[in-house]
Image (cartoon, rainbow, N blue to C red; front, side, top):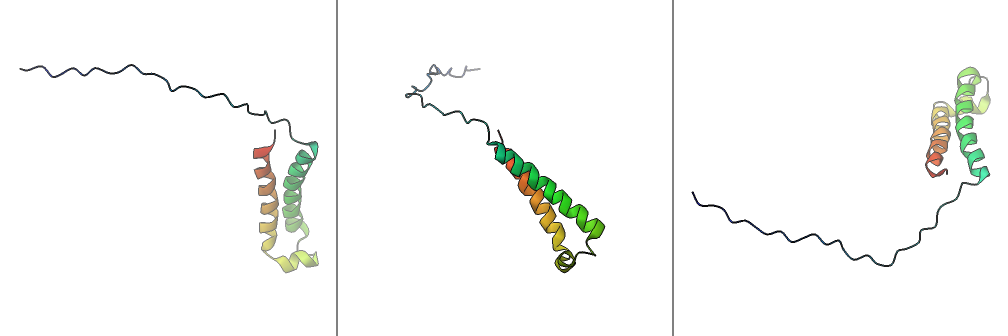
Length: 87
């Protein structure tokens, strides 16, 4: 049976590197950022708790109806999304 041809592989040469770019290290977040982040999460939680406990006794919460859930969860999700940029 005939033998198949053996292919020669060229040696791998890594690409030549350019001048390295200095990346500025991001410092810690401002303390106010952390306060706003946790404040939004707590405010959303507080909004939902107040809605469950006394939502029918507060006029503007009664008018909002089911939008109270959207407001509470939106506040909490905004705070949670802020955690991705927190250093």
